[in-house]
Amino acid sequence: MNRCQLNSQQLEGYQRMFAEARARLPFCAIYLDENYSRVEFQTKALLEIQSTCETGKKLAIVLPPKHGKSRLIVEAISWLIGRDPTKTITLAGDFEYGGKDISVIRTSQAVRERLSGSSRFGVLFSARLHDKERKAVRWRTTAGGGLNVIKVGHQSAPADHLFVDDPIPTFGAGQLASNRETVWNWFRSICVTGLKPGGSVVVVGSRTNWDDVFGRIERSGEEWKIYKRKAIE
Image (cartoon, rainbow, N blue to C red; front, side):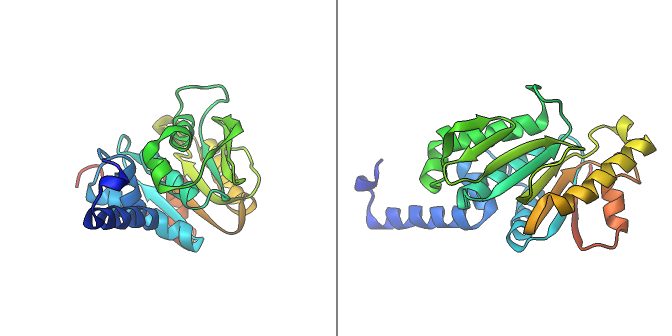
């Protein structure tokens, strides 16, 4: 059914749905993918991300493996870049350049595909992918914003939003004190040098050690919001 065939009540309903999706991240996620999980934790996590990014604060989301952490980031970046395609976003994770089956690369590709080919995204937002800058590790919108993907330990130009996906991705790596110290030093550095004034930070991942990034965030005394999900609730 096209718009010309809609009556005024139906048209008003669609307009209200579009307005809600643009205004609230969980509604956007469900509109873009009707099969997306609507469980309470996912909805609350998306609302926490929205609040963090709108206010320029810091958020840590802790959840067990295989509980949709990367999907949270896909939905968040899609919504942020859709609402304001001039914004720059950095996504950091553990990967090697050239890898094709790595979480942060898949996240970048998923958002990029929405900008370039999703009819639902196109109805909701005006953001479009730049014709010449569309690599998985770095793509741009026609409005000048975009996404940079970096490896944990590397630096990036200051961004409006910083997302970190599993700073220490495996239990084994988390048992090495040298790994934990290296990642923590990098993390504290990029949270300062990798952000524009008023920028936000969202780190999502699973615990690997009592002294990992999430443990140190809790003990840091800094203004972090921490949102957790247990393996069994």
